[in-house]
Amino acid sequence: MTAYDISGLHLEQAGDSGPLLLCLHGIGSSSAAFAPQLAALSDTFRVVAWDAPGYAKSADAQRPLTMDDYADAAADVIRARGGRAHVLGVSWGGVIALRLAARHPDLVESLMVLDSTPGSGTDPDKAAGMRARADELARLGPEAFAAARAPRLVSGDAPPQLVERVTATMAASVRLPGYGHAAEAMAATDLRGELHRITAPTLVLCGDKDHVTGPDSSQVLAGGLHKSAYVIVKDAGHLANQEQPERVNAWLLSHLHIATDYRTPHQKG
Image (cartoon, rainbow, N blue to C red; front, side, top):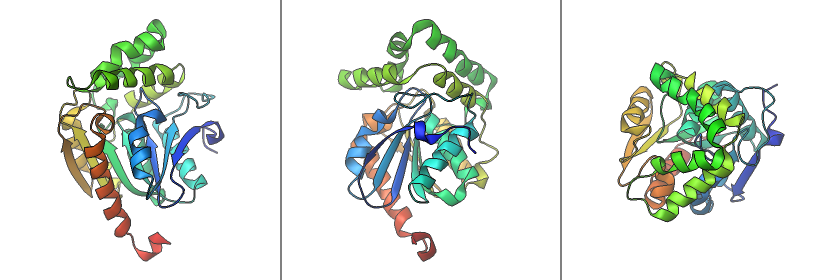
């Protein structure tokens, strides 16, 4: 039995047929972050985006969750929808996606890891900073917390409307204890030693103006994986899928069609 009952998850879905695409959002967000992908990719894919456990419209967990627990919850979502999935993860969601592929390789058709990292456990200062976020949220409250943090997630050239949307999404999504569980899971995670175990073909993508995780972290991921393509998206910050949705969606579709076309007959069945 997994640590989180997925009957408590809120899921947004677009598309009624085609391969399953599961979308996992960043640590300060929700399924709303994938509106451009739900709209653009649902003609040929069943696109499902979750509110992670303890976020937005999803129920709180009954105990603290580890990165394995988040990965297992994602695995349960895939099983409930028929077997295998392409998995798209942004930032924290990318870390969950990679752990999912390492723990449940039979469920992951391919990966798309955007503006992500091996985890904050790669560096003591990063881990401490991640753990401090829960106290910051408790002190400021969701709205002030979002107002202080959200503008850093896009480039300086992002339109005001996007900044407002990202801020509003964060304010409506984060709460304790869920955000604290996620921050602790990130602080305790270092994926560098397990990347070689991941066999799913992976698109690693990063905005060129991402100053949160940044291209260096994405390069670590791409370099450690067996089957990876590495893409830099021009004029995009940490939330490249929202700031440059047309460019990102084009890369996602290219990857998805290649990954789908090259499945073996056994996998296609």
